[in-house]
Length: 273
Image (cartoon, rainbow, N blue to C red):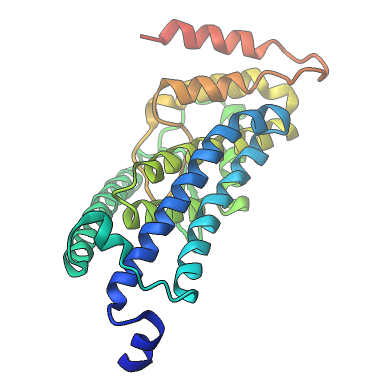
């Protein structure tokens, strides 16, 4: 594409138009994130964790559709420069520095995690985008054979669903939209819903393992390491762990199971600060 054809499509200031499209995409994505953040809890209760996780397809689709509409409609009004009061090259430079800076932070965290993997101290987790693999700590003597099988089943669900790619895409969106706090919130909630969906899949195939599964979650909680491009078993912080444990309770109307929820919840309460 020649400069003249680009000018014909985008107008005399193509960079301003692209920045405007990116700004509008962030606004559309933020609105979709807010809607999903509100909808995910009732959807989880009514339909299940997998449906709640699938809702996170909506924000990137909404964000992607917006700049296409802007560019196709020849919207040459420099919205971004008007909104921020800065020349387009300055805005682009600030954006690039922020994206590269956050990308460097994520890359450093990934390298730290992989060093822990090589030392046998990391996991349970799934690493790798093209050929994902399950990693476990070198010393798994603290886990029973049944607990290790539950952990592997959970991680196999991540591999089957291609969750590491979704996590990497979320990290990429965080880099590109580093200035948008709702994007970072979405990445955090997506990871939690990702774990809940895998929890639900494991329990569906092993309904009598609820108590053991919850106890295994508690046992692995202290093993969390930052992993931007992959999936790791424990969610950070006590609140996500409580959510995961709470959802192990059989849904209303289901046949009675072992009282694992009560057992695990008591353990959560005992270690809460």
